[in-house]
Length: 121
DNA sequence: GATATGACCGCAA
DNA sequence: TTTGCGGCCATAT
Image (cartoon, chains in turn cyan, orange, red):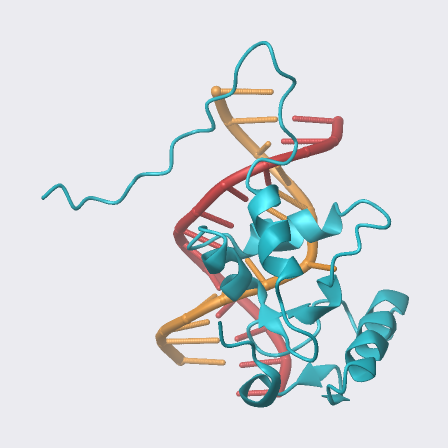
């Protein structure tokens, strides 16, 4: 039964349209936007839900390219180890930790308990 | 077209 | 716990 993987096709871009800088990003935004309040999801989880089995880096890349005022709860996305992706002691790191705490999430040493706050879709 | 980089993941030592 | 390696996809040069 033709089980073979759907083999991701190489974006069929049309010449009449400017390269879509988004691509699968759109999908990622949707997934991130549906993360419930007080919960967190890992990059790999988001990528998987978005249809990218191994697109964890894509998620990180897409989030880093988020436009200002995207209203996206990017702070609810953390690494698979439950740690904040930003290096400690950085402004971005502190900001994400603060946002998570505002949602009732306990952040300790830049880490979050996935067993406790991990999003289970 | 090739190379290097990136808010990563999983495994092994 | 930390470090190293390969893999994945997209962007920039």
